[in-house]
Length: 488
Image 1 (spheres, rainbow, N blue to C red):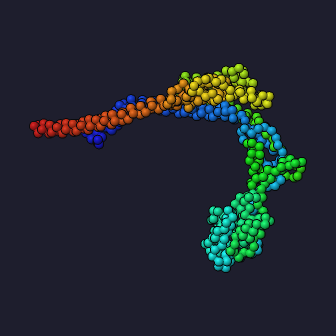
Image 2: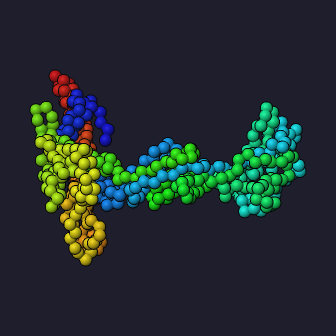
Image 3: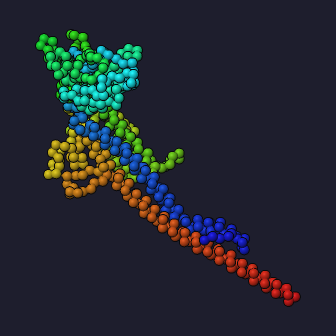
């Protein structure tokens, strides 16, 4: 409702109504303040949840027995690169790189044209079509866009079943011809072999119908070969320079040949450095989670404000669970100090890589057990061969921290849970409850919006009616004054 300020009374009606509405809106303002606090709390829970999820990822990397089968592969020569998958066996083997893979190439050096694109002055097609050999040994007639060298190459490259690719190449200044290249490297991909005595495989039949003369062999397609042994050597062949499963899980890629009598030695050993890196990642993730919880739950001081989760008992317990996973040791194996992990006086995890490496070198299996061991607790629905977090008794540090992290983030489904049970982690549950509260508060704020709009409309009407009433009184006063003046 529109109103005109103080035409009769001289009062600022709008300012008065706004001041009254601020008083009326005090309950709504309090609700909005509560929403702000709840949002900060949700953000804090989400920050902790992110750190705990990272801890779960780091723990899983060490709680999976398969992750402890990684080997590190090294080569004594830059002539090869070697990679080893998890599960490859430690050991060593030697070989020579006898030859690298070659891609079959032929070039029409018997003729050339002065332009690769001019179909009128430099045609290469005798008629309007030409024939090529397909990968299956049959021939096919192609019709190029025009008779130029570029069009011939485009027609060949457009044939999916062709045995080769084509390119226009310059063999001398102002002289262009056609070059054919097998689509893949190796002996089997060669599209011609003039030495096998088979006429149908002669190079001259690869492409016919061009006026470029005869094609000549530029590079013979050949397999790469590794020579193993000296007295009675055997050869490993590959169409490419990559040799998969030279030993189970081991791939070798040759980059150059080696001199006769100068073999390459490949060494495969347990990747102690790689395992140490994973342990460091676990320690770092645990410390990051502890730091985040501490920041979010800190109390107010003279110089800093309190964290959004100050006094939160659930967060204090979560922090204590992480620390207890370390301080409680690895069951019958004892303290984690044996593998370089301890707690300092500030409540953070420390990692001594040298101590870990020494322990791993002395007893790899026992060192692994410090991280992924657990005591199986039987149940008809429990796994007999796989760790059940929250059910089986975790002994190894990774198993312990994985359990703590899962309980906090994703939740853990127990073998005793009935079918269809929906699990929820601690933090998502806390976040959901806070979000439910925020939704309820927002609904109350919306209801107050309606209430305040009605109240403002009522005030505007009251003050408008007041102006009208005062105006009428002024008119009556003026009339009476005039009447009294007439009587005098």
